[in-house]
Length: 170
Image (cartoon, rainbow, N blue to C red; front, side, top):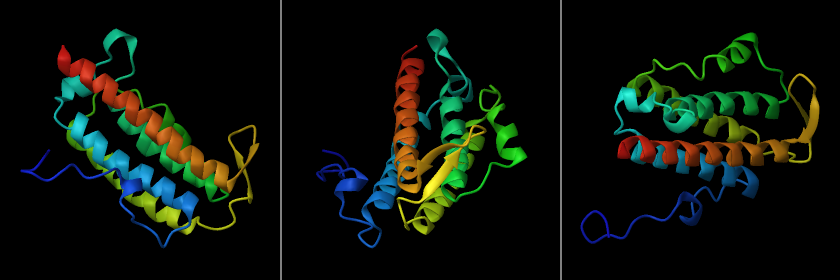
């Protein structure tokens, strides 16, 4: 039990929310909500040094927080049928920088999750619509991209939490 005698809240996808949104975009929104809940819970208490540490050759928590924020922007740009901008491409090369503060990382993450939720809601159209990804213009669908947004985000949330636990235990 948490918060007195109240049981913990179920994960976003079990709360019966966002019923006005079609199923696939709703699942993506729930994945973003879960990221917005889990990352602060497990990572916000780390020091700036811990956030930027890469124990045992693992990518630092800071990388995962930046990568989630920036990859959401890139993937949703493709989902919108657009190509990446030069600044989006340049930002990829700064994701491993080791000088970020907790405040900077969580401000970027929170802003990205909020903007991404708005963008996902706008993309609740024809999920079979063809989209292309990357320099090689690999073909996928809007639905495929949206599902990857959720999958990719949660993959990095898990890696960030595991790394946070390892760093905190040292």
